[in-house]
Length: 206
Image 1: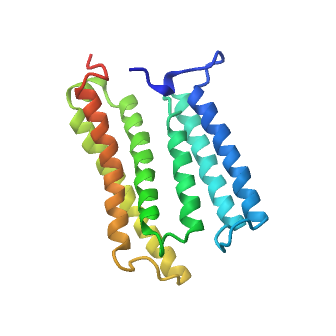
Image 2: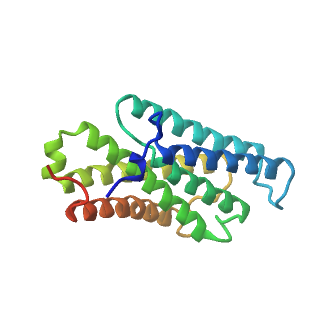
């Protein structure tokens, strides 16, 4: 089974990366126009929100470049990134934190699928191949531990920001608990799929 991220152009650029960049740039143009021209009745589609999305994208490009310099192909992260920014757009537009919390949960889920993917690829590169080949579940536990720790750290940062700006939204109801659950489910689902594919022979065990 050929990984879509392994389909390259004649210049050696992953095709999935090119398509994802075009789609992301198209979305950013749309988001900027929607913000400046006030296409939607939302106070949250601000220039600061747009700058936040651009910062996330630029960070993704930097991470991709750094990994690529070390021979690690992270091209498949970009379709996941598009799904996350799209979910973030609808979450902001619909004020999902209060009105449609399932969208906010999906955003957490997708974000940690992406994060688990990056950590997983990192370990495949830097762990001795014998460890991955003989102990895939050990590798999965390492990835789950790191992503879970990051999820807890994210909620702590949110708590400090919430208290600092007096927004009083963190901790309301089961918000924090559900965020942590969806973070874990996101990374856990990704790892479960990887292990199923491994055991099914889609990845070489040699």
